[in-house]
Length: 201
Ligand SMILES: CC(C)(COP(=O)(O)OP(=O)(O)OC[C@H]1O[C@@H](n2cnc3c(N)ncnc32)[C@H](O)[C@@H]1OP(=O)(O)O)[C@@H](O)C(=O)NCCC(=O)NCCS
Image (cartoon, rainbow, N blue to C red):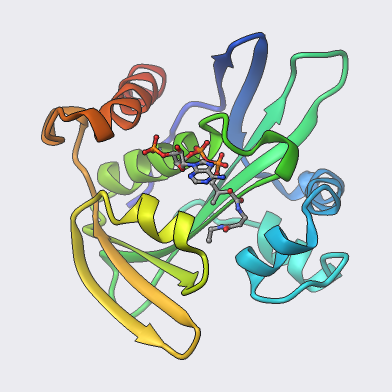
């Protein structure tokens, strides 16, 4: 199913202003630039390897998105005079399980801890819910305790271990009202409200 989501929305955090929008084929240079801002550790945690640059094939795969099987949104920091690529989140549906998609989220090191990973998570979840997905699957290195602990707040439908990787299936959340309003979920619920308001179709 294809739905026309908004072409972008703005998110503000303290003094910063971020544009959140789908990735397009012309974003190859921006993506390469953002990749260059990742520490070796972040590259390893995201791609399980430490290449300095994305290959042409990877850039093509990450930017030439059909918006149906493969959905990808990025965040640009537009607080200053130039647009700085700071985060990207994507999911790719499984051909054999059309209500399940694999998700990956990355935020550059200088912008981590500001809620942008959460915003990408919520944006992807919102789109997944609208197009009828039931599960989002995360492949996370077992040593990435911070990412695993963050994900374990949600409804885990399945967890498997494959070598150094933990695979978590999280139930797609229909909207913020479906989340129990306890302290550890408050920032998440607030982010969901922002995305629901901005993405309202
Ligand atoms: C994982 C990642 C996407 C998180 O993005 P982020 O913008 O830094 O995270 P956020 O600020 O949105 O915080 C998300 C949660 O993690 C917590 N958190 C953030 N930084 C943290 C840190 N250094 N240590 C522990 N917890 C932390 C936040 O408190 C928040 O928890 P909450 O939802 O309960 O409030 C980002 O750190 C990253 O790209 N890391 C490298 C690649 C990677 O590990 N990807 C995940 C596997 S695909």
